[in-house]
Length: 207
Length: 219
Image 1 (cartoon, rainbow over the protein chains, first blue to last red):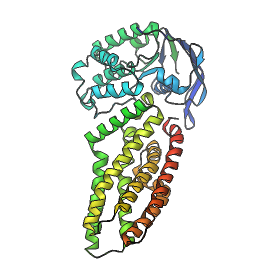
Image 2 (image 1 turned 180 degrees about the horizontal axis):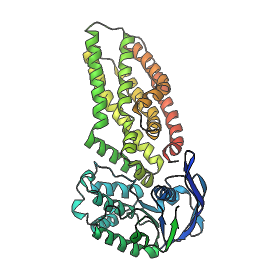
Image 3 (image 1 turned 45 degrees about the horizontal axis):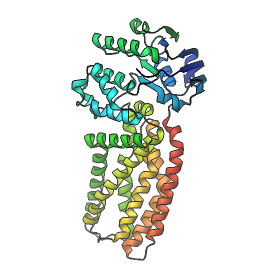
């Protein structure tokens, strides 16, 4: 297991709007390494958008998001490098095989491929690494996305609707991975599934 | 950064090699327009200036039909989020620039002999080849960031041509006037023109490189 990084994520009045309408307003929370947080809320409440803001790939409209590593503040780019993110909005390259996708993501992140390939095997994708991703079922794609999110052993794991399209075995593997990572990782899960929210110790509800 | 750029270049070429969409569309456009011009001319001799205008119009519109695809594909297929997560914006821009330059060079290699053969133009010297190379580089380098803007604005391919034209006007003007002089057999300042094109490209690439992070990031 990797050495835990002491991450503290602080959201203070985070708000997001598109045009004149607010998606969510005034979201505040603190979460640190070793903690887990479920983001819940009805469809359209902005769970996925909030996850993208936390991942550093989207900007907030108001409020502040601070992330520190051992007390040192991190920029959005530095935060992005520490985050593993799986989301239904994230699409994979259909023309690449699963193996090529793993290779592309790991090389881009500066991580070795061994850990990601082990995760793919654990997710039941070992026999499918040579297949183009466009031939994958939606469940297999979800398994690959989760493996890719964990490829660089992130300090912050953001999972948006992680159980979507997963079968019972996939959900079991996901739950065991979350339990294993929890001591050394800050885990945030956006979901409406009580079984997934139940994996987390804290909760933020978007009305 | 270098490692991410290399991975990204390899990925872009692999995806394009398997789908062949952008190259096929641009190459088909180039071949069809060259043949159409040849048939319309009907073997009649054209003035060097007309040859220069037709040649660069074909290069320009072939580029417009394919260059935006490298960014619009990422937005249309939803893969841009993955790129934002795993690669720094500078690596994305550099990789797309390399891909577009390679694609336009490949197109120029198709267009130039086709044009010379079907329009019955005598073989020009190395000066023309140097100008064609620097001209195609200038078009690809100047329009890569515009392709990103178009992709972020909803991927309207027609918009790409409209916003690229004023930016590329100095490039087309220099390319057409120098090509015309070369075809006339007069003493053309190819080195001066190539230098201008490379300087123009360098300035636009530098500005694009600085602006790209703001264009690429989500609001």
